[in-house]
Length: 513
Image (cartoon, rainbow, N blue to C red; front, side):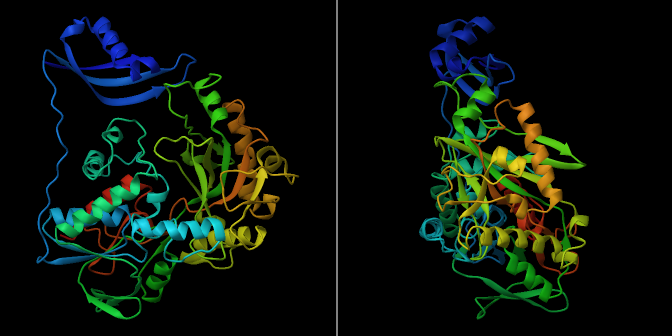
């Protein structure tokens, strides 16, 4: 028989099968020799007390053998079937393509960037030589921004769709089944490229198409109906249905839509900094130990406060990771973070961002739909200027930042292009600066040791989400005025991470099938 149980164990018991088996035998009065297999269904860490526990949901095989089931997904052959064009090969675009194939429709993906492996050369040029390729960087290219931002798979948007279906597809394409077990799963930047390649192969092998180095430069409309698209200002592709999944940083697409008279609207987003601590310190704070030992993973943290009527919170926290340069144009500085699968770098980092509201931009030089976007751009450009018009990031020690004091020396951090000591009050308006300063003080009260001058603030963290939404009908998911246009994913304002973007891609694909 199979008995499903929930149990709380020590970190060592969770790691060692013999100890776990003994614990189960004692707690549930099952003869040790009768336990033939223990399958972990869910796992989470309870670090609220000094005595840290691991919560497990288990299937116990009692006098019954266990056979590993292979996660196999079959797809239809669609090479000669009707077609839908997808713009963008991020999670929204790729999962839309897989769903179209499942629905018997041929997807044609148009991607401005390069294949995932080829992107690495441009990332190296960005990091070492401060050269930004506008079409191939941390945000643009096969797999989208999530590929080199370590593939965090946690989402609170579970009502939007079937999270397990997304995880099954990722496992089917090479991800470890651990992502279905962990409460806060992630894949790791070192493992994602192969998974993305496998998804590409599935799409092509089943009759879909993917075209790289292909930038969307026009949408051909007639009577508010999509009739086709233009690629690289020359190639015209006829299509009646177009899934627009370009990501939150494709500013030229917003400009194209504006020029075509396609309705958009401003939306709120968040902006702030990225702070780096030593991972050892975060472990001590979170685990309440001198060190985490060999049985616990590098500790994350998640924290949020309300300051002066605004949310200030951690965003995209990366245990054992690095801070990366994520500019998409030459004259801007943007930060983000990532971790490898083992999260074994000596530092941790997190975005700490302030909630922005539409009224914050009413006095900005450009009002209306583009006000938030222009505000975002102005911060990134000023950071570039403060960094000597390079990809060096303006930085400040944490206590100095809160006290408005220029740091005499800023230690080298994981941000490889380098740092420029600066007073970040020159970068941010007061409503952002003051809230960040007060927020860090509050965080320090909650996490003893967090507020230290050994931590370094990097600015800005500005690409948390799109500052523009492309409105669509809530039922058909078509644009509210343009028939055949399906705004999709983060860039359209309907997702906030890999899982929610993938789910939205599936929904748009089903709606236009």
